[in-house]
Image (cartoon, rainbow, N blue to C red; front, side, top):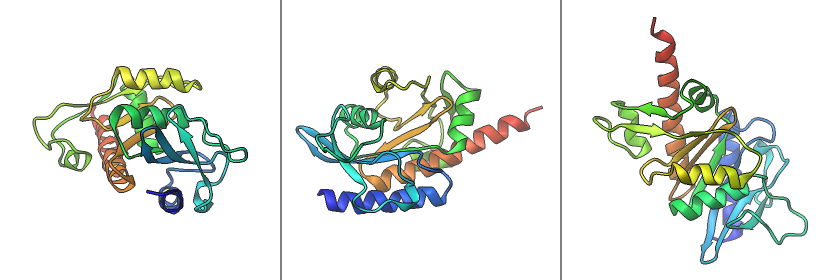
Length: 200
């Protein structure tokens, strides 16, 4: 994917997530891999309303989230995008501030367990007899700390990471797969939180 195409795709996805209430204000960030060797990603710029991004509101970063662009500032979390893409082999990473993952992380700070739910198939796991644990890590402003925590709990079959009291990262081969996984995971976590409330 070239940078122009990446910019258009990222802006469109941001508009979609904003409409869902998952990228309020300037929060959240998305990335797509442009090259693998060396790793280069197009990531949304910092400080802009994600519902109003244009195809030009992206910047190229390396695996550490650093850019050579003298003007555009990448998201502060670009380094974690790079770490996830490098470790998982993902082609796209989405970071949104949906409420369900954050609430679930509050209830299950050691990881959110999921099992025997049909929607798990949309997340890339089996609907039955498959114990899924969505990792939860403490928040940090240091992307190296978050990257280390992600890598310590990484499983190739679990394409998501909840950052406590912050948001969720979900990844896939491309933006569409990452989005589908994020939508299915949000349903799964909403169900898990709601049914927990219903237990007397």
